Length: 175
Ligand SMILES: [Zn+2]
Image 1 (cartoon, protein in one colour):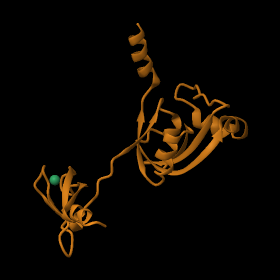
Image 2 (image 1 turned 45 degrees about the horizontal axis):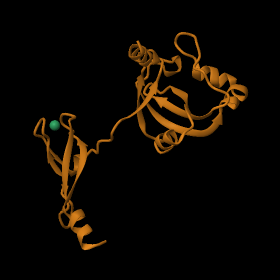
Image 3 (image 1 turned 90 degrees about the vertical axis):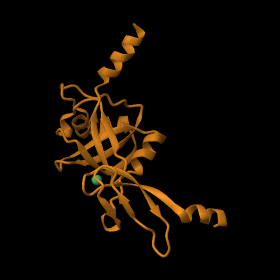
């Protein structure tokens, strides 16, 4: 480590934390004092003094989006990612695991999400906040591989965004 690095790193850094008193997400400065760093922050909302024993790091929420309120989700709002299986062809999902695929892709209107036999997918397994497991397929690409494979164990917020909304916007632009 060069002297300059040491000086930069020795002074302080910022961390996002949650106030244990009011729940506010705060940006706190950790001072790199000797011999121990100083973890102390006054909450900007409630003025509670947060000390090291109450230090709760805040993690940015991750989102898993669905285009429909699929019955398999059971109206759960959060889910922990348990497992990621990569590189499954659509053909294999449809031919080798037809029961899983139809259960996974059944929409609330009785129709099915379209799995394309020629495409590759990732299969994600989640357990939701009602302790009900569900799976979901995502396109196999680099972005998804990074997002999901490195997030096993993390909690995702479930959001439902019907495709109709996007189509409506496109149609309006076209019209
Ligand atoms: Zn507070």
